[in-house]
Image (cartoon, rainbow, N blue to C red; front, side):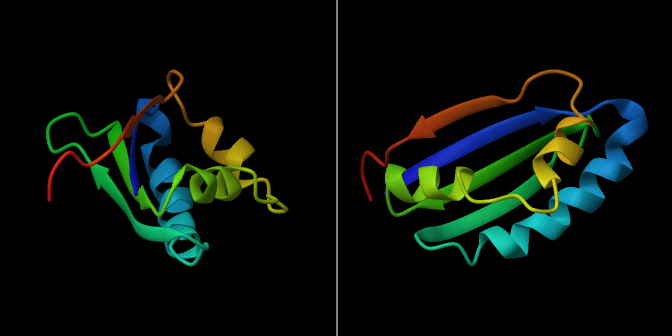
Length: 96
């Protein structure tokens, strides 16, 4: 099992656009093979900061998700809202 934490800094004037796109992606991603959990969070103090916390069966399942076709151009649309490149971190559970 692998947990991925992505931190997005969104342009102030594009917060609503980001939220609209991202909230549509979440239920779709949750259906991907190997997805255990996929949750989107917004910072309570800095409203242009969002975190996506994903749990996948393994790195291969995550890679398959990232390499899936994007016929609606969602990645390009959502990327246009970024103030800077997202931070991404991969974690493994140490104890349960």
